[in-house]
Image (tube, rainbow over all chains, first blue to last red; front, side):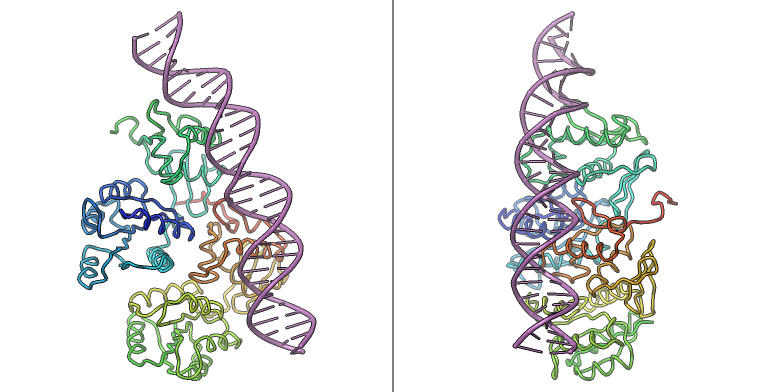
Length: 232
Length: 232
DNA sequence: ACGGCACGTGACAGCGCCGTCACACGACGT
DNA sequence: ACGTCGTGTGACGGCGCTGTCACGTGCCGT
């Protein structure tokens, strides 16, 4: 399942787009400012970025440039949104590395179409990728999880949670971050819910606390066998 | 080498497309009218048809239907071209069995990409290919399906769905992906429709859930017989 | 040692997902 | 015109998933 990062400071427009993308079976994350977008882009590793040109802090073009400058986000396709359909804007958009360009007003349907077309072109998002950490193994394509080459049955949510943790080995994730990234940006949930799911995950994985570590007062993190303690 | 039949009465557009397809290493044939297209289709046996919706004599939809009605050309993938991106057109296009849909104006590059994607998807040519997975067997040429060497009668849609699933064994397909890939890019269908057809498929195949697995909260996948942990 | 707080854990209720059935509608052949 | 077949959709029920609460437990500072 692909994740789309929506960057727009017009809340109603953003939520409209978010709704339609979700209906189309895509995951979404929303950023209201350019800085927030750059932060989220490295956190949630989106498969595509929907980027408004007009942002309150930095311009969409600069966001675009900085996304391209970061090796982590260099490959992410970018679709620009703009109020004016001027040729000049179009050219500028493509110059900084946008993959497509949609002018307002646009129909949500059309936007979804373009997004899907670009996703397909860029390989369709998650393509049978495999994540490994110690005895743990995640197959994104088949949506299967293994511990020591033995399959464990996880629910969709557990898989997503583990996927999120395992892609950031050694990095502490607060409960709020996890709620925001795994559950979605608008989830009025108790932070303790995370605890329960971490518990269930540990139980199913069998290997318990050695892999999913508790950082008291902060959150959770995956053990990083490569660099046991050294991290900031 | 695959051959593409271009059907369009706008000579300049057709030659532009032709040029780009040839550059991409594909053979081409051009028809200016619908009747000509139907004649050529049986003569050159193209591997894909690029079909404009607006033709001087008969409508592109009728051409589509008649291509589908002829056993000789039934299997040929069809990509529709249209000036308007109206939803109504889109739906009509898919109803008559188009495999993809491109709205003008389009970039030649994108068109070539789509054509190649569809060619790849349809098996790269029209040679009675056979797909096997466990007790299941699909004969693409004769459009027949077998379970344990016993023929099962599938409808066109069921066959297409099974074909799509079986060519990606072990990979989870979301309902949205299936709707998009089997039904067409933006079919405005309920995702529950997929459930019903999967059920009918399981029913006809007899082997039930062991082959077509449900991944709760995600989608469906075919069982993969070989061990996934065997990895380089 | 003690108390407070953060976390682990089990139980439980609600609900969302999915299988299944029945029906409507359109296309097509007779 | 009629019947048949293929297909999409709504309804319904069951069951698994999930969020929350309550309580137990361990950790840490004082």
